[in-house]
Amino acid sequence: MTDLFAVLDLNRSAWLDAADIKERHHALMATGSTSTATLLNEARRTLQNPALRIRHFLALEYPDFAPTSRPHQDWEFFLKVGQATRDTSELAAKKSSLSHPLARAALQKEILAKNESLRLLKAEIKNRLADCENRLRISAGPEILTALAEEFAFLQKNENSVREALLALDQGLA
Image (cartoon, rainbow, N blue to C red; front, top):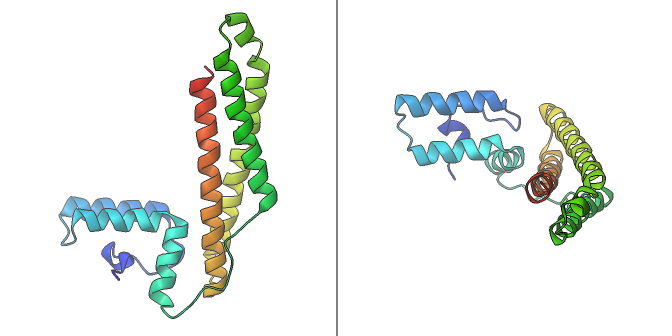
């Protein structure tokens, strides 16, 4: 297994500053590092994503560690995001089925309310990700790091769902 921390000449740590990763990547790309551009890009992609970085760190630091934790599941939050994205899809379908401009305009209040609820959900996810970053800065054992990696992956997946719903709202409902 290639040590992607070494590829970018970074200290091996579960927490890294995203700006340091980007800066180091650009410096090595500009100087024509002995590492290939593909390897440098893979290192940046992996180390910038907290879930992937933690998993890579665990594989290097604790090769014999077998995770015992289950994937992070906050069912209440998962259902909240799922309902919001389904509601957005239904609203988009409803608006696209209307041909008269006045009928479409009548949905504007509902569209604005849905947009606001999605933005609040996006802010909640951002706060949860920031909390994970703060917990990651504290030295932790492999069990805690594994749980954090799963939580990051869970939040990133939900963040993508909300982002796609916002895009659908902006594009399909304009």
